[in-house]
Length: 59
Image (cartoon, rainbow, N blue to C red):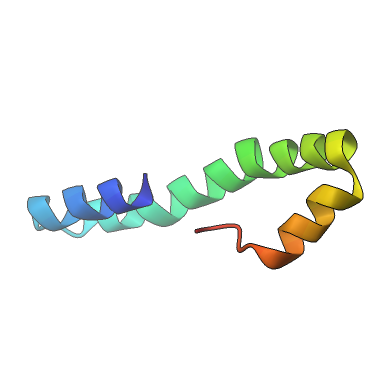
């Protein structure tokens, strides 16, 4: 999704869309990624924590 926003920003050739990208990343992290990670920890426990240590969050 970030790549799409970046592509749109480049196509529009204006600065404003570039400001949206960090805001988007912040909202996605706070509203979706953190709660989902908590659910995964509760569901899978140590298996998920091991996976989380091996894989970067923003692939």
